[in-house]
Image (cartoon, rainbow, N blue to C red; front, side):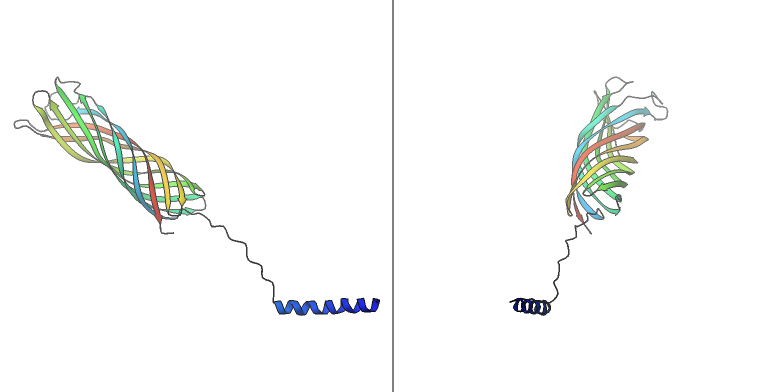
Length: 241
């Protein structure tokens, strides 16, 4: 009996390598590699929000004009704002660097009564804002926080009116300045993200030349200081990965 058992064990040991050789090497599937999110790429999208700002000083600059060098007052402006944007980002580890251009439409208007004249009112309306900015941020996976800054432009209309004559002066101007902002963006997928941000715009003080709207009036000029703040949210379609 012991002899039979020993023979069985020996035959089993000899047969195992042969069976393994017939089956071939056992292959283990590699573990799946997790996809690493990156903000590197370009994007384009749309935005909507709220613009509030101020049109201040209105200092008389008309040579020989009444109240020369004196302020005629100022007012606030406010409205909705909407527009489009496009840009590109590049990510180094957690650091994200980018450049962006945007253009927005608005109808932010305001009016004030002259601080020096009776029956005279001054009006302004911001029609558009645009900027080209660089931005720097830090990414936590699909969440990005950033600051931005650069050059800005605004398209704005000015006018002066009297209770007797109606609109007496008008002006249309494109003004340049600077902007700085802060925001956050979240990527739902590699191709779609959403952001919320605040931007401050400063166009300094510029001399605005007013054109008479009534025959017989001479040209006039005022120095106006314009600033604005925009809170907006938007979406981006991302590509170029």
